[in-house]
Image (tube, rainbow, N blue to C red; front, side, top):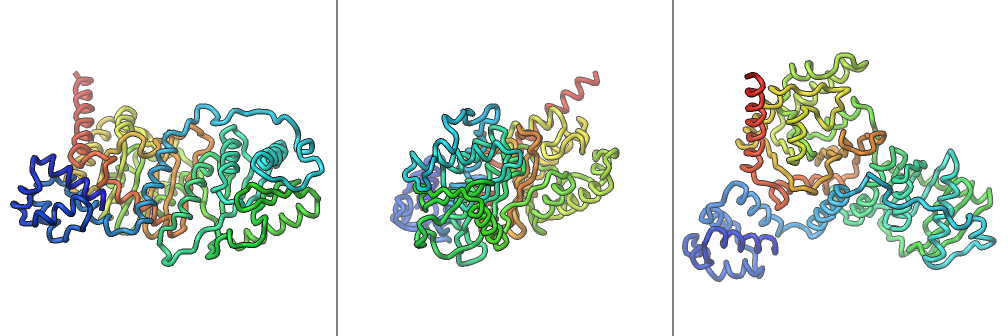
Length: 487
């Protein structure tokens, strides 16, 4: 209710009105308006229509007005989920790839020297050096492998995994995570989303070496009697860990390590893979298709998606004929863009920098120039103008994002029905890590889809008019440059 109340106050002030004047014009009782503005009651729906009319709201203002009204009736989990996803993308947008996030250091002593004959370790000051020593010993191997059932919420271990990948180490890591079982298949679980919040950055940085799996559980781990319910496993060690990871038991005998490895494989066979990777352009194109509903396309990326305006001739012209899989990729592209031309709802959210990059180079962030030739100037002008017209007419829900809302090296395509795809683009600093990361877990798909469809009505985007004007101005500038070059 708070967002709606605050926005209504903002609109009344912006339109130069008072509560009394709005009440008189709309017929909504002054007492009712006063209670709505202080959050003491919900505005009746028929009064919403009256206020929208008499406040003379623009299309963008009315969209946000209605969105905030609807949010009053949502579950608290849905609102919190959108906040968490916003935090995740803001963190990814600010992630510094130019240098390791943690400086590589040598351990002062080996694992053998630190552990000695001890098997039990208590307190963070003892457990964390143990874990760092175990990981350092494993990373020294050419076939480094780590298997763990420790939840992503274990901050120290999660940070250590990120440190390894940011420092260029690429051990194969397999992690099993408990997901909470919720009532309906598509209900959003804050616990599950919190886990994925930690997992996605690792997926993107791991060069496809990190593999998370999940299972559903109705009983919290805290109810278990086992003092060491989690474990981390390498080729030579098992570290059994307490619920809060402040107590540890170190096992180093060969038969113990073998038994835990067999146990981990048995657990893995009962789990679901959380994500699927691919770096094959044809598979990525098909993954985009999978993440598109029959009646709607929902995408966020630094550049706009012009797929609704690609003709069959354009696909044939700009896909490089020298590719060994040319016929397959053209067929897949034609199928994809045929769907995008026909879907009822078309969402594309993008940034000013992405538009400027396309205007200057004609290249597409999500299709390497080795696969798709850059668009010539006349095509760029045409696509920018068509996008502006589509947004202005309402055929396309397109919005310019504020800086930092979404990372410029990532695209996301969501589907309420079929899953969510995260795709690293040509702007991704770790070029060898280009890949797609796809999820199918229903609650997570619902959370990311819900976040994206609410974004156009939020405060972190420009209005319909501002977005269309920016696109048209960019196209007009390019047209003027083209005319100047011909003189």
